[in-house]
Length: 522
Image (tube, rainbow, N blue to C red; front, side, top):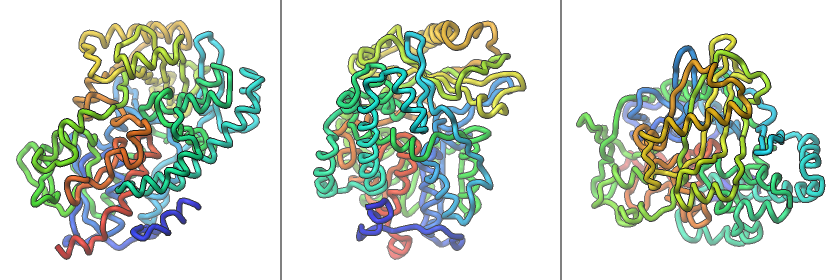
């Protein structure tokens, strides 16, 4: 069954069709969206197309959430999400408004998807080209070619169920979960990503190549459910892309769609409380004291932060403080944004530098919660594709290192600069010779920044960790179980983090949010 068929056969589904929907009148039911990240912006567009009057509020001075932009010395740095997969999810938002995304945003494919550097200095170019991938596997692990092919076929099967059939539908009741148990058992969802990969290939290098993807959505490959191996096929099916001008071009385009339909995006508007009356969300109160009344509220703020700090305690029966604290949260990130006055032409757009330890490092991050001396890194060089991100003859980069969230007790005010220096030294010794002499721009984001800037609970970069017991029905629901007419989008709800996941959370609202007429009648 295709994604479209799966939605059509749900009795409560509300399919949106491309077109140029009628303008929304001033008397239409009002939806307030808290947070202008990709999930909130996508939700606002979809609600507007359905006939809701929409206001998006965000505490930052620019839209985008984690996709905001840092500027320094003529450089522009994308704040966070840069790996664009499943571009049809963006294209659909423009299509729903009767427009083409190509009018506002140019996406360019990236090759290779990732250049993976092992600690011994060897490389693996990871791409969607079947023949090139087969050649890379044969070069690194000739005995694993057949096993790799079997893994890829299983990834396709998991993608068909996990993404095409389940990513866009809600899990509100235990029956929703029970219906998919047979499929999950057949696809061995009880296995971890690493365990699933290890079943098919024996080379440790290849196991790391095929299992790192959960880290892109906040998961530990050694504990994340093997459902997430679908990412391997998702990337192969649609490719990995970059938005020219930076991810901010997507943000600007989405804001334009909202405003073009009469919606409002208010920046510097910090929500202090979600107003709840008689068990129903009725708007928000800003820290300024202003109240914005609404018929429904969608929170794109971190789901744990929303329940713990924005929803009144007396309105919460299931999501008590204790329940929120009991969840397992993703790791955090240390991110260093920097620019150089020379170009490094041989460095790929996306590079993953694997450290000397794989499982041990992940145990330090996720279980022991200690800041290790070694690290694995993701290096982003957007100027490999888009020179406009830096002054002429210069390169822009950011490098991120997975680190424990704030429960680790690391004093980042003291540790940030020494940690940055260690990363600088490692990059200088491996990929970027002479880096320290060519730095002309530098800024950092630590786990404290994820808490202070994005209100991420515990400074976790990806909210709720994607383990099996925190997936689908067991994840915080898109429709609040405690407050009527309160809904959630973003990485902490179903289906999870990453750009396809976050955009899919907004698509779930097509099913769970009633038609505008249901609100107008109350």
